[in-house]
Image 1 (cartoon, helix red, strand yellow):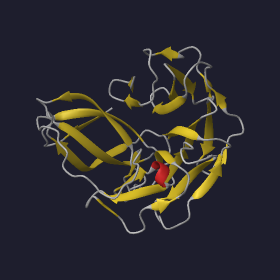
Image 2 (cartoon, rainbow, N blue to C red):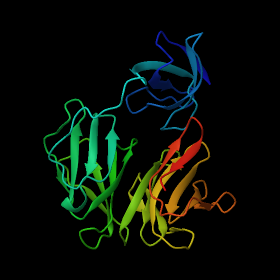
Image 3 (cartoon, rainbow, N blue to C red):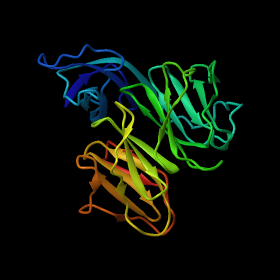
Image 4 (tube, rainbow, N blue to C red):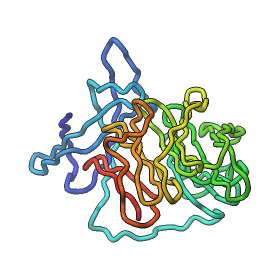
Length: 288
């Protein structure tokens, strides 16, 4: 836990970007790719300081130094509103952010496209859209290799592949990874650098992002009515949570097996899909 003094109004939401210097036995030169994950802890507004839990997303090591590079303050009292509508996107489904190039990637469903938006101008960049064919559905960013992974739900025909986009050169032909069936949700695990894909055969498939090889052993989900869809990672307990019908399965990513001690969890009566992790309270939110 680091306590950092900062001359900012901590009664407002604060986003902090940090760089790290690791212990001498395993030095890593701080760079844009060596940005850590931090979670705001207790806030003491009288002392104008706050605590953060940090780790290096590349090595998994606890940093010995933390330096504030940038911060953004948003005013929670302001009324949320739509500030701009970006035209030219067909059948938009899902989106993921590329922090290195400050771009948003948007999947285009049955259009077969992935759109790339410069968030500084809110316009598509040169080379966008990327036509990958099929029906691009869900998308997740791999910060280690600076790539986007896109699933295909088979909306425009049979789908058996995952698409990988090089965010450093979007003109480069995307890599196609065969997985044998259509797919839905996708989530990245920074602790083992694996991408977890919810396949429509009621399994979770795992791709090693170092070589884009598919693990030959899929993780079977709990049998029951309804289809599988959403997936989200809990880095505090190294677990993946997967929605299926009205239940949520839990995967222990240290063994890549179903966690039958803590799951499955029954949530409501309706079909579930969206799921997201709150690192401050260490809870999962599921749309029902």
